[in-house]
Every structure is written in C-alpha cells, then in structure tokens.
Image (cartoon, rainbow, N blue to C red):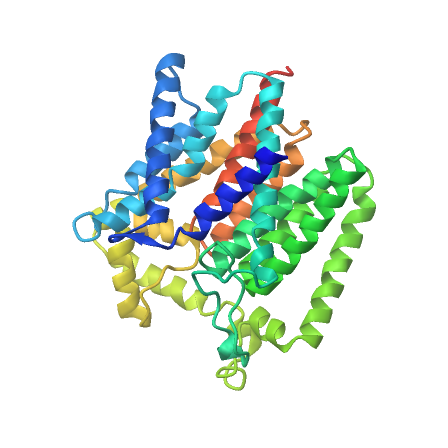
Length: 402
C-alpha cells in the first residue's frame, strides 16, 4: 500500500508541474525527452542481444523518424522533433516491454501496473474536484456557453488531454472490475469509475465522451461471457437515456455536445455545428496539400508549414482535428503509408490474442486509439502508454501459455 501511495504522489507531482518551464523548455519536454532516450537505450540493447526487433516497434520507429524530415525541417525543427518524439512512445514502450517479458508472472505484473496507472489517473482528479488545489492550466472557457467557469483539466493541461486520458483509464478499469476477484477490489473499482465518469463529464470535451462510450461497448462486445447479449443492449439503452437526460436538463452539456454557443446558437444549425468546423479544416487541408509539388506531397509539409497554410486558409493556426489527415499533410504520402503499415502490424498482433483474457481490453483500447485519431488526432502520452503496455501484457501471456 505504501509503495502505491508513493507512486501516486510521484505521479501527481510530475504531471502537475509539467506546464512549468525551466528556461524556455517545459518540464514535460525535459522528462519525456529523458524517457525517450532511456527507452531508446534499452531498446537498442535488447535488439542487439536478440538480433531482432518487434515489427510494431520497427514500423512505428520508421514512421517516427520519417516524421522529422519534411518541408518544416529548416523552419520548425523543434516542433518537428517534438512531433517525432510523440510518435515514438507506443512502438518503444511496446518494444521494451516485450524484451523484458519472460513469463506469465511478468504479464500479470505489467497488467497490474496498467491498473495502478489507471487508478492514479482517475484519483488524481480528486484534489481538484474537492477544491484542495487549482490546476496550473485552464480548461475550456465556458463563458461562451454562458457560464463563468472553465472545464475540468486536473493535471492534464488541456480539456482534450484530460478527457482522453481519463476516458482511456476508465476503459481499463471497466475491464478490471469484471475480472476483480474480491469484493473490496470491486468496490474500489466502482468508486474510481464513478469519479472518473464525473471528471470526464466536467471536461466538456466530446472526444472523451466518444472514446469512453466506444471503448466500453467494444469491451462488452468482445467479452467471452454470454451475459454480453443482455448487458450490451442494456448498456446502449442506459447511455442513450443518460445522454438524453443531460441533453434535456443541462443547457451547457447540450450546447457543448452539438457544438453551439451563445454566439452561434441563433445563427448555425445543429448539423453545421456538430463538427465544430472540422469539415472546413479537412477541405482546406486537401485544397492546399494537393496544390503542392511532388516532393512536398511525398515527404509532407510538417506541422509548422502546414499550420501556416491552415492560417492562410481558415484564419486559424491549428491542426486539422483528424489524425489521419494530419499525418497525410505533415508526413506526406510516404508517412501515411508507413503509418497504415504500423496500424496493420498492431491489429495483426492483437488478433493473435483473440482467445486471450486480455483480448477484450486490447481490442477496446485499439478502437479508442483509432476513434481518438479520427475526431482529434494529437497523441496523448498516458493514453498511449496504457495502450502499449496492455498489448505487451497480452503478448507476453500469449507467448508463455502456448
């Protein structure tokens, strides 16, 4: 118990101070750069020793390296390196995890760590929910919806970061609740899930709502129990009823869900507002990307150049809010092909575990990974870590039970 409390304390402090800067560099960049270098060293050591590298790791790293070399290389090198670093986490965590997994006991230890990390993610919200501490970063400015407050962020810096991270942790905890053996552990899981659901709701970020619902339904659908045929329709009905109640009785939730605010509710239809302008961003990307010369289409524009073009096209220096479209414009046709290969290798690996007890979890996390790519796109470290480690736990268990 003491070790778990120390882990939670270190987790909370580390992620709380991430936005703070040492000179011109944030603490988040400093410690994650150190993590990348450590993982790279361990990965090279294990690769040299085994004389091979997992396919997921190989193709993921090829894509990450390629993402650093594009039209933004000379005008936005720091941003390029930052984007490349984010793309290394899933393949490197997976590669290092597989290299140390040598028994079913290791698999269980990795799974327990995934659960511990998920609990830490959810319980880190409590000090903010009860007002003991204030976040360093602000969430959604809810004044545009007529409320003088901000959406919940906790230690996760942004509303989308909070909703995606907590939503992913809740998928893990739903799975853990089903497989918990003791009454005490089930009560703790139920309490954590309740807190997490409330926290995700308070972010008012639709991405979190979406991946949470999708992840839970995939988790339930892939359950081996015949009770899924009862629980699946019951869960769908419950989600619809709760959503309808919130939609009817919370004007803030209603406006946030459909993408309207006090300035647009009388000038935009619901169908126009639902995508928050995403369709306009996507069309703009295809317009300026397809107008580029062949080398730019092949290697990509990079995030710096692409966002400047988006500024010229729609008046905002932003991403496309779709991970696949962003990969196309940032990394070109080459990067898009490499990323699709990377995804197929992940799915091919997951399908090997379809008879494993971890298959419902890893398949649900894979779908939430894709869902987050479709509606948002930016990589979220803790969500990626939970995803990668869950695949490692499933693979190690599969290897040593054959």
